[in-house]
Image (cartoon, rainbow, N blue to C red; front, top):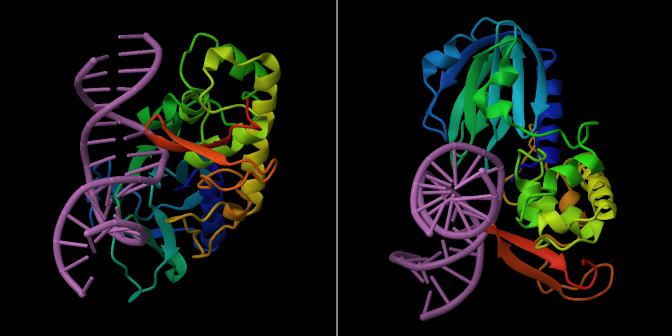
Length: 272
DNA sequence: CAAGATTCCTGGTGGC
DNA sequence: TGCCACCAGGAATCTT
């Protein structure tokens, strides 16, 4: 399930693939009934346009063209891959044919992904992007931001971390991992977080995301990179999906509980 | 208004 | 082997 490090990895892979294929020649929509429906004619406006680059905002991938931006969310199971003629697969919903013969496929079995075309220039005002919180790896995400923004909330800290209005890019895996590294229980009420803990949490969110990007993301279940390979950060996960196994720090048993509808993991001895 | 629950979807898994 | 219930979770939408 792609979170910030996985999306970042995909973006870098796409950038590499596309830099020698600057023009989008043809779009082929196989089915548009994704999480947010899209019609073939919405995508047709991209045909003939030069590609300018790939960016990431939160967990969204932004393909920049001269006049438009293609906004893409991978949802749970979305992936991009090279797919020459004859290499079609089940659940390929879109093919992008580029100059130079390169052909990209967007594949998404569960169709939780999203594709949207908006005019270039005010893409950040698109409804899906405009309410997003700060990027965790940039300056506006700070210990002060965490502390101030969390004061009046009674929600569990892990649920708060996964709320994209508070900070973007942190999903179910890295929320548990960051809280473990910060030494704070996921069930802790947001308003009870101290300044010192906010500082530690800020540090651990950044740290775990940066390390995961360095590893090419975590390959758990569905994630794959644009080049078809996988990341290997899953080998370094300390608590996620490790219920009842020994804590790598203290040897105690890893606890698990459903929180905000999502499986959550922590060490009751290391996290207060 | 906040917080929690439900919804979308398919593939993989475990029980029988 | 088949069948079925259940689970995975990002984000929108609903209910409380």
